[in-house]
Structures are given as C-alpha cells and as structure tokens.
Amino acid sequence: MKLDKDGIKAVIPHREPFLLIDEVIELEPGERVVAFKRVSADEYYFKGHFPGNPVMPGVLQVEALAQAGAVCVLSLPEHRGKTAYFGAIDRVKFRGMVKPGDELRLEVELESVRARGGKGKASAFKEGKLICSCELTFMFA
Image (cartoon, rainbow, N blue to C red; front, side, top):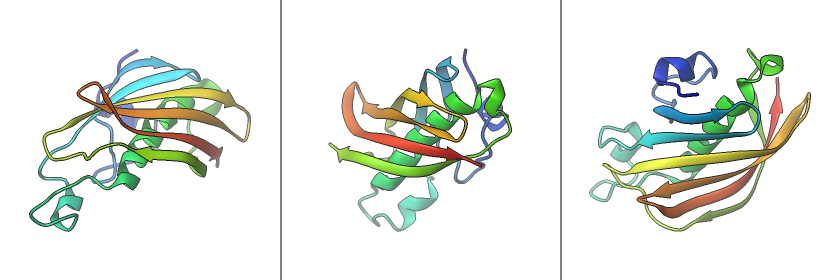
C-alpha cells in the first residue's frame, strides 16, 4: 500500500511544519513500513541548525522514523484514530549528516504491538547508506 501526504495525514495527527514524512511506498499495517523524507533547504530548523552549515537535527531524524512507525501501527483498524507517543528511544546511533537536498529512506519493522503500545526497530538510509538507527517503544492514547 502506498500513501501520499494526504493519505499520511488521514492516519497520523502530525501536520506541517512537524509532519516529517512525505510519502509511504510500502505498508504492511502492524508489520513494517518504508517511507521517504525529502529534506528541503526551506525546512524551518535549518535557520538555526546551523547558519552556514545546515544539518538536520538527529532528534528530527528519530522523529521522522517514529512518524513512519506511527503510520504502520495506526493503520491497523483497532488503533485507527489513536495517537502514538514515545515510551522510550533506545540504542540510537547516528552515522552521518543529513543536509538540504538529501532524501531519507525510513524503514520501520514492528516487533510487537499490543493494546497499550508496542516496540519496533527503525533505520534511516541516505543514498543506500545507514545514517540513523534506533529502537522505538510507543504507547497509545
């Protein structure tokens, strides 16, 4: 299943300027998702991070992964309309910089989904190279 921005907005509550995924190209609800974030020079955070040397903050890379994971889990009928919140972020590793013009391929594989939350493994790639990875725990409200 593929989703454009409108399709993504129908599943998760995030909106611009904090919607950090542009397209979902693969979706197996409750199992796995592959999405893209196209990093534009106009991103609000580049004005201060860092002037003359714009770099996407690592925390926003993790947030983009979490939003992709939220699309995956909130696409399940029993979780539609809920909001997924961070419960924990573990084993985060950054392996490179993300700059204007880069495209991030966001991959999340859910390991467990229960009534109150779940866990997943997430990875972001730039030009085929692993750039960020982490384990995400989430809760529903």
